[in-house]
Length: 365
Image (tube, rainbow, N blue to C red; front, side, top):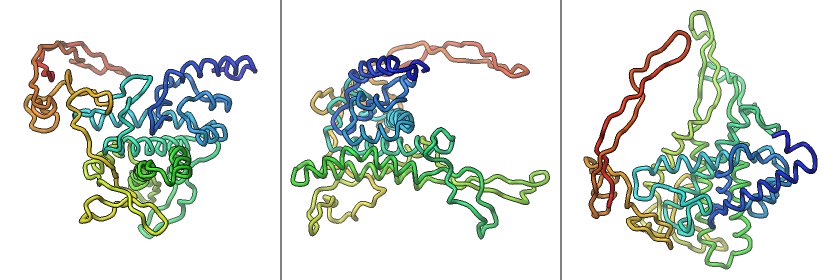
């Protein structure tokens, strides 16, 4: 990317190219900045002037971008991780987190206040926190590094050492960037009916970051003769993003339906069912029940389940009965090509053959 730094002409060329790219990546209402996920990693955001060309950023986010240009590549990667993880966690459900196309991402889907939309907010906020924290630990950012506040010896007999993940910096930046659009809306729409949705989004953004924080774990290494562990050094490390996705998926399954209530001078979200406890900062909340996602519906952004591959023998949501919504399914024979008879050759590569087999595939009508 030397041409980006070659001078005014190079910067101008970069701006034109990025403008053309991002004009095709209009996000939907709610989390427009997720359009960054569709940028090629080659199109690095390397000069402040590019921030204005990134369609989908709110004014506050644009300012944050200009002041933290080196962090924006991590934001882009965090958005990419979030969408990938969402699609993995929901791969067997009627709504499978599919992006409609590069232009609208989730289409009209994010206009709703459903638990699925709540999950998208949570996983997106978690993605930025995780990616920025990881970049700090790898030394990719000049503004942060390892968490040096974790040091000294513990009562358990080990010494804090190594590079503890700087989760404080990662979550703080995620809050500043991801919440920026909602903070703007909350300050201008306090008397608007949209305040309920703003509070829902902010709550779920925080739930995503809490999942990253709460998944921090202690990793240790032994030192000594023949692994005797005479000395043990430990550091704090984030869980994998796959683990964080699983945590948020579990919280999605136990999400709480909420409504708006005035408490003194504040508006707060409380459970619709007053027998439920108020949601904690780690819980996922939603405002309206989800559609069944059985049929394609442009208004709700549902793609339907027609053409989806289902599991004939499963009684769960991925089974043909539930996934196909009672419409039935068709069976077709397909050829699957796989690697087989792999052999390790010293040193150091593996050679495999290609084997094909025919299988029955079941597809929803």
